[in-house]
Image 1 (tube, rainbow, N blue to C red):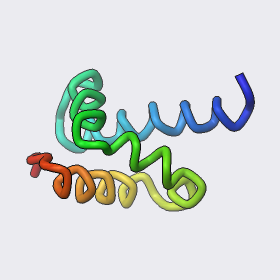
Image 2: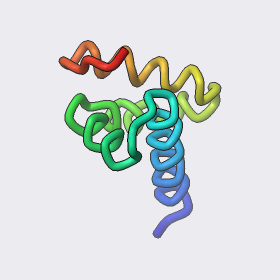
Image 3: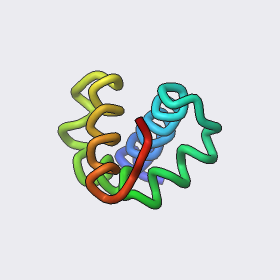
Image 4: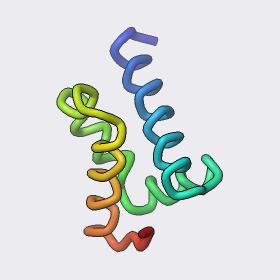
Length: 74
Protein backbone atom coordinates (compact mmCIF):
# COMPACT_ATOMS: atom_id res chain seq x y z
CA UNK A 1 0.00 0.00 0.00
CA UNK A 2 1.36 3.40 -0.93
CA UNK A 3 2.24 5.74 1.92
CA UNK A 4 -0.38 8.30 0.88
CA UNK A 5 -3.14 5.67 0.76
CA UNK A 6 -2.12 4.35 4.17
CA UNK A 7 -2.16 7.88 5.59
CA UNK A 8 -5.65 8.48 4.18
CA UNK A 9 -6.93 5.18 5.57
CA UNK A 10 -5.50 5.89 9.02
CA UNK A 11 -7.04 9.36 8.93
CA UNK A 12 -10.47 7.96 8.01
CA UNK A 13 -10.28 5.41 10.83
CA UNK A 14 -9.39 8.14 13.29
CA UNK A 15 -12.20 10.42 12.02
CA UNK A 16 -14.73 7.62 12.39
CA UNK A 17 -13.51 7.04 15.94
CA UNK A 18 -13.77 10.72 16.82
CA UNK A 19 -17.26 10.88 15.30
CA UNK A 20 -18.32 7.77 17.24
CA UNK A 21 -17.00 9.22 20.49
CA UNK A 22 -18.77 12.56 19.96
CA UNK A 23 -22.14 10.91 19.37
CA UNK A 24 -21.63 7.95 21.72
CA UNK A 25 -21.96 5.41 18.91
CA UNK A 26 -20.25 2.13 18.32
CA UNK A 27 -17.54 2.62 15.72
CA UNK A 28 -19.33 0.23 13.37
CA UNK A 29 -22.54 2.29 13.66
CA UNK A 30 -20.64 5.52 13.09
CA UNK A 31 -18.99 4.03 10.00
CA UNK A 32 -22.34 2.89 8.57
CA UNK A 33 -23.88 6.31 9.24
CA UNK A 34 -20.96 8.15 7.65
CA UNK A 35 -21.07 5.89 4.60
CA UNK A 36 -24.83 6.23 4.22
CA UNK A 37 -24.78 10.05 4.43
CA UNK A 38 -21.52 10.47 2.50
CA UNK A 39 -19.38 11.66 5.41
CA UNK A 40 -16.55 9.28 4.45
CA UNK A 41 -16.64 10.53 0.87
CA UNK A 42 -16.48 14.09 2.20
CA UNK A 43 -13.34 13.27 4.18
CA UNK A 44 -11.70 11.49 1.24
CA UNK A 45 -12.40 14.35 -1.17
CA UNK A 46 -11.23 16.99 1.31
CA UNK A 47 -8.30 15.08 2.79
CA UNK A 48 -5.64 17.45 1.46
CA UNK A 49 -7.17 20.28 3.48
CA UNK A 50 -8.96 18.50 6.30
CA UNK A 51 -5.95 16.80 7.80
CA UNK A 52 -4.60 20.25 8.66
CA UNK A 53 -7.50 21.22 10.96
CA UNK A 54 -8.54 19.92 14.36
CA UNK A 55 -10.53 16.71 14.67
CA UNK A 56 -13.17 18.67 16.58
CA UNK A 57 -13.71 20.80 13.47
CA UNK A 58 -13.56 17.79 11.16
CA UNK A 59 -16.35 16.10 13.12
CA UNK A 60 -18.38 19.32 12.92
CA UNK A 61 -17.88 19.47 9.15
CA UNK A 62 -18.78 15.79 8.72
CA UNK A 63 -21.91 16.30 10.82
CA UNK A 64 -23.01 19.27 8.75
CA UNK A 65 -22.31 17.46 5.49
CA UNK A 66 -24.23 14.38 6.60
CA UNK A 67 -27.20 16.52 7.66
CA UNK A 68 -27.26 18.07 4.18
CA UNK A 69 -27.52 14.51 2.84
CA UNK A 70 -30.36 13.43 5.13
CA UNK A 71 -28.46 12.55 8.33
CA UNK A 72 -30.13 13.28 11.63
CA UNK A 73 -27.62 13.11 14.50
CA UNK A 74 -27.64 16.02 16.93
